[in-house]
Image 1: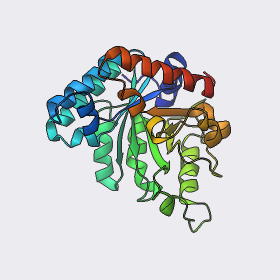
Image 2: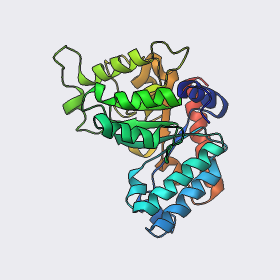
Image 3: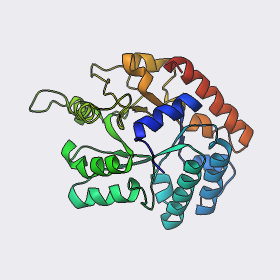
Image 4: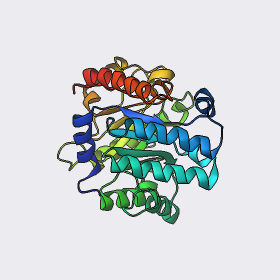
Length: 278
């Protein structure tokens, strides 16, 4: 039950459990590493092991929908059940699906992921703004009504990203800057932390964009992808307190032993607590 806006709940859980967001990314090589078959059954064993080990000690989780979708309906069922279990344990779930479309199609995605009684109801969803920021309006409306949140792609760490994100709009700002401006406007009336966040890769080194959007900044790319806890200060500057640092392989590689997963999560969480001031 979402009794408060996502931003309020996010700040509270990060204060209580630390800022770490564990990405649940069941790559085939991780299933192999854990000695599991590359099947829906292997996916379920992997996912539920992570959930059982960490659901009550980590505040935020980010399952990557693609690694569940590749197993069809059986994989989606695992994602649905994992989301339910994590939320029942008091954690927040960001489903990383990067949905982006227009009109009733976007409204359909919003109903599935953001509506309180949606079949894949989560706490926040990653979305793509590259059909225009206004194309996100159905998701924005649903998130507001349901107390959920959005994380909008802004400055991604893939090398192809700047082709679009650094391009200048007719009004002058970069595309990424226009996205950040739109989020800042959505969060303008938030008491502390707004519910509309940006995805900003932890590996971008630095940026001239203003990241103070009064909302959360989801930072993937930590750990195995090269981003570091100390590097967050350089990337995010004065907005570092609002960073949600996301790490997956750094944590998941310590499995399948529950104690190994817990120790890896605790180490990462302690490092991010120090850097982000928790």
